[in-house]
Length: 168
Image 1 (cartoon, rainbow, N blue to C red):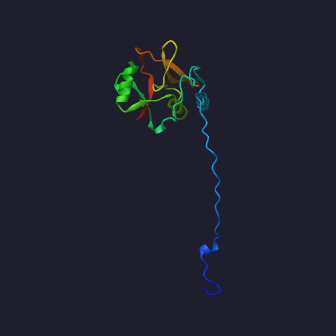
Image 2: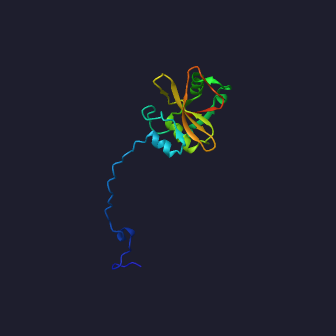
Image 3: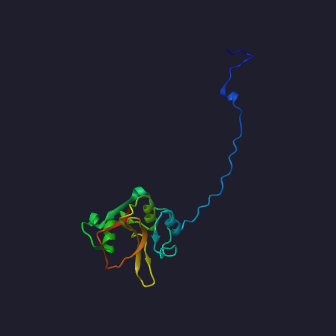
């Protein structure tokens, strides 16, 4: 019971006001991730030595895994052994973009079964001999390689190659 000598206690009367001290955050430093770091992190057993920052500059964060699709030319076009140009026109016309090297490495870490031949047509390098190369994941029993495949304009991709694409 309350009386003039014992007024009712309120929660606000019981809590002492105090000043909350919040430290200033440390300046955020984003470390530049190199292709060599990504290859080491993703537990590949090997990578072509021509896959370097100079030849394949990293271009931001990879696409979200939920946007990635591994598709075959047979699935999209109903046939195989097609040239890169035909494949690219067909996939892009259906709302996809091709994965770049960063996307391919991200896929390698989280989703790759270690067996499929996975091509990333979104990144390429042209050597001094004017040959265009694209990154490809190649695997076997205990082998997980990041290779470069020669993408000849007149060359055709076999049916066993799958293309990593990103939904636009």
